[in-house]
Amino acid sequence: MVQPTYMRTSGALEQYVYAEATNSLGREYPDLQLSAIVGNDSKIRDLAITVSERGVVVLRNQNINMGQFKYLIQRMGELTGKPEEGKLHINAIHPEINSCLGNDHALSDPEIYVVSSDHNRDKFDDYLNTKKKQFASRGWHADTSYENIPSDYVGMKMVKAPKAGGDTLFASCYGAYDRLSEPWQKMADSLTSTHHEPDIMPLADKGIKLWLGPRGHPENVGGKFEGTHPLVITNPVTGWKALWGFSPISMRANGRINGVTDYEHELMKAYFLKLITDNHDLQYRHRWKPDDIVIWDKFL
Image (cartoon, rainbow, N blue to C red):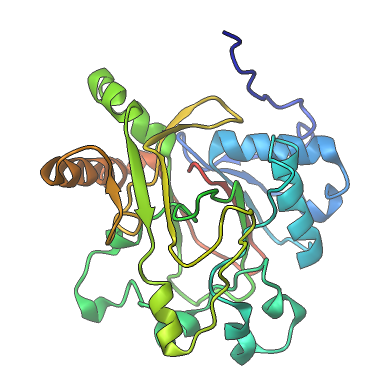
C-alpha cells in the first residue's frame, strides 16, 4: 500500500516576521501584505499549508481588493490539491439580500458572503441575543459542513468593526482529537456524522431568495442542505486527524452521529462539544479591527 505524501512548507514565507497566537492554533503576520504575494505561487502555497497547520492565520491592515482576495483563496486550494471542479463556495442566501447595504460590486457577488449585524437582527436567528437566555456555545459550527463538499479555506475581511464585541472564537479540532483517549479515538475513527442546516429553506418563506446550486462544487445543489462526513477527518494537507463538525448547529434537526443509539448520540455530542468549550488552551479569540483579514482551514 502506498502511503500518502503530505505537504510541508518550502520556506517561501521565512522573510516575514510572525507570532503564534496560542500554542495550539493561530499565527499572525504583522507585516505581510497579501496584495504583495497574490502573484507568487510559492508564497501562496506556503500560506495555505501554514493555515492548515496553524488553523488560523491573521493579517492586519490589508489593502488587497476583493478580486485579488477571491483569487488568493481559490489559488490556495488549487495549490494544495483542490479538484479542478472545486470553486469558491457560494452561500445559499442569495446576495440580493445585500441591496439594503449599498451598491458596492462586492455586495452582489455570489462568491462573497457578507456578514452583517443588520441581517442577523432582521432576517436571521440572532444567535447571541441575550434576551433569549441561551448559551453562546450554541454558535459553535464548522463552515459549510452541511454541503456534500465543504469549502477548503475560508477568508474573511473586516470592513466595519463594532465598537465592542463581535469577536470570533476559533478552536482546534486537531487538539480536540488529541484529547481523546486511544479507545475513544478508535471509536471516533470508525464513525460518520450527518450535518444538517434546517434554517435555510424556511428563509424563503420570509421572502429571502436562495441559491440552490451549484454552490462551489457540482455536488452542492438543491435545498436539502445535508451532508454526511467522517467524524474524524484526516487533513489532506497536513495528514493530521481532526474531530470535526459535531457542533450544535450541525447536529440540529436531522443531524446526528450515525450508527449509534439516540442516547449514545447525545452523550457523544455533549462530550465532543465539551472538549472544545472546556479546553480554553485549544481556543483563539480574534478581536476584529478594520481591514483585518483572517484565513482559516475548514478542518479547524
